Length: 416
Figure 1 (cartoon, rainbow, N blue to C red):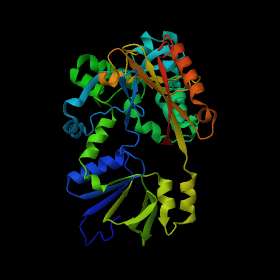
Figure 2: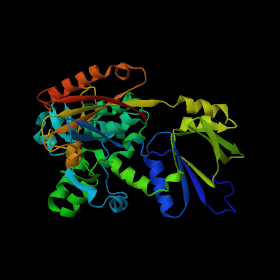
Figure 3: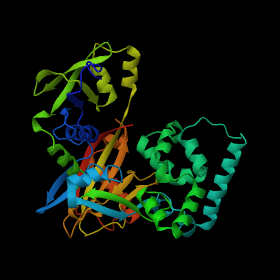
Figure 4: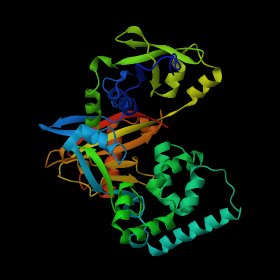
């Protein structure tokens, strides 16, 4: 929103929120010559795309706030900033199921080589029967994530290999989740088992197809292609932040009021160190949570908008970090858990992405545990949460003994 978008060219832009999106916008706009300011209430830019370090026995370990790989989009920009510190990765994801460890997403070949052939045939028959029933009108359920994924893969395959992970992420049954969730991730799961098998066959005869599927992280690919900063995902954010005029970065600053008139934003009241100031610009871009933005508007917007903003909910992520007394632990980038009894949805080894994340003779693990405000997991003491996570890792045989050092947990908020 500009103050006078017809007659006045943009000169100054204020970005509300300095997470990855806000920081990336500021980086691009500053590069084009705009005067950009960022208002961020945290003490550091980058949001969840940050990396922190921990020193143990004189050696430094690096952890992200959850793993952040970078794929083809904007990779030239990232390479310009990172240079040789942008590492190329060719590896795979895995998932643990009731039947053991498999590739994630489920690869077509593994349906017949790693799973009981009768069970695999049952998945395909179930998929075909469901599609046939839906085509002839026997199934008329309202579109939601469950119906879309069931049509894509069949009911039993979806329930065994996708539903547990999705429900851990969202804290909702799959029938209560929008089908947009599935549409946005079609490149990862594939369109359906038959299409995945056909693409796998194509990849046997064409290197170009193999490369395209790997770059797109398609389930028919043998491995994925990605990039990762040598010192963690936060290294990229730190470098983008360093390109900005430091006097225009307002850290530890909260947006208290968004001043509006006739559908236009006329200014902000920002509080920092107990002092308030008014800030003005030609354009305001908000990347802060919607309810914070709506509730800060002065004068207040209509009550129905306020009620809608207050109804938005959060999903909490607790990160459990461990130091392990061995050089490498896993043979993949990340492991997704499809076992409902496991407290975490995903475990990853930072050293699988960059050898610099841990010392040469040691490694580490990070587990993402999703929960909702006030529930059993969210209120569980750190030691108890670490214990049940370690028990699950021992059950999975990811660990064969207790970790050298349980570092504790980090609490994050993620939009549902």
